[in-house]
Length: 257
Image (cartoon, rainbow, N blue to C red; front, side, top):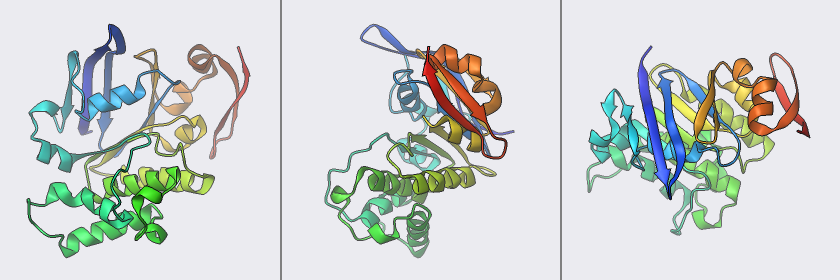
């Protein structure tokens, strides 16, 4: 099993508070791995560390078995793509133009898009159901449309590793399912995806493994059925849940503790 991305006891401290505390995670080729936990658990901060956007105070992150900070940015951008939570769009570009930016890591400074690049852009637009938005000004999109566009930009870059921070949070039901299927299909053979999710039912249904995070630490890791036990959810979320289903599992909060 090939490990594509790994953190070893990473710690991140801000304003004398440990937001991530000795966290070790791994992402193997062919896996869709979910990162779950309550608000403020440190999930987004951990994703920033895994993407090399922030420097950890202790520990290390390796991408393709190399220290992520020692990989040139251009090369790192070809290996890893990151979809931010509620990523902003500040320029009046068309959706197609924004998606095309995902091909920049594969081009030299003044190189034009090739036919292969355009195929990657068209494929990403189709996979994220952005065809009807192709010529629309990106600054006019709704929150859900903007998320789909930014996911398309990441897919267009054809990375080995995809990190996605709550990519279904602003989506309607149809596009939630579509996006989870997209991520599931992405994580095959030599590629992998780590996704932050709040919908535990979808996490249980689509993910190979889960990490449950609480107060900056990983408190459980493994198969969804093990991680999302009633005892773990009581401890971390402070709720009683109703669960059921095999092919389509569900987890529904019933009452606060």
